Length: 509
Image (cartoon, rainbow, N blue to C red; front, side, top):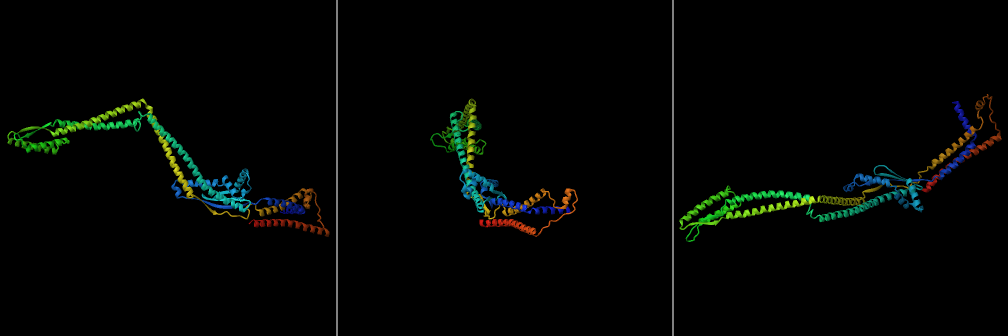
């Protein structure tokens, strides 16, 4: 412990013995250091906190999802310090007063980008910080950057929407021309292959329709032939003429014979309507006819010269007319069937002769439908983009809200001159003391008897202290005053520099 204490005393003595050298080195170091600190330019910061809010009601109704809005906010953060935005900031502030060429503008943009910092606090909160040589300029840069970002968002949305609409319009025109060309090609192909593609639809579709119609006609033909066979059977069982009793001589009429003839006509009419002999009305009418026939015979036997007359049977005539109609219908169905079979034969021959025509026609139809689908989709996309653009620009889907306005700072953010001045002072004192201490170790002197004894290896009998007379003590006192005055002057210069720094800050305010 005593050895350490001695070493400290020896070090302090070595420095104190060379105090003028230490003070001179401290003065030189402090003057140079303070000059360097004075040459460091001031840098003022201005900060603003901005919230970028997005609407969530109307935009979502037109397909603008939450992810789309979050992507827009992220894109805004990434492009906030773009070259175009920074150029507008430079031209809109005092930074652009010294710009004379594009090269200088490019260099200024690079320098300004280093001085601007954008940090994202949350999903929609941003902190914008700018560092400039003056507080007012830093405030103007931050404010102008906010204004440019807000204007660029509105104008950018409109510009992007207009560019998208122009692109879609161009694509729609191209698709419309291609669709018109494809439709014209289909019309020309139909005209050139009129014999192979008659009517609407392909050959295979027409053949399928013809087969279906033939199956239906065959079913109708079977029904018509069955009905015609039934009529022929009824016609064979119906006599062409009827025997009607009559009264001779005076030529007077017989009422019973007339009623009998009327009843036979009604019976024939029932059979012509398709009623069979088992039908209750037919059975009743047949009974009535038999009764009227007996009554007519009795009336005829009572008068002289009575006989019978053969008259045409109305039922027979009705059945003949109905048979003619059924025969005509059956003939027409048979003719239609033959025509369809002939047409199917022709279509099959054409399809066999030209197998690629139908396939080419189908390909042309698919091409037309594909181009039509693309055209309709582009038109729908254009309407959607136009609606989204109107929603984004007219309803302010993204809004800027400045939470903390940028302020003018009177205190420079960098450098911290008071701290730097104090550090230079302490560093100068330390460098001076270190120089004196190092020089003391380089010179071959022994501050204590123990050091001399240790270095020589010989015993030291004793040591004599320095004795000063009165003039020497007065000279030493005078030098000590000068030393203390020089040291105080160094501290006074430091204090003056601090006062000057704070006065300058006040004048800047």
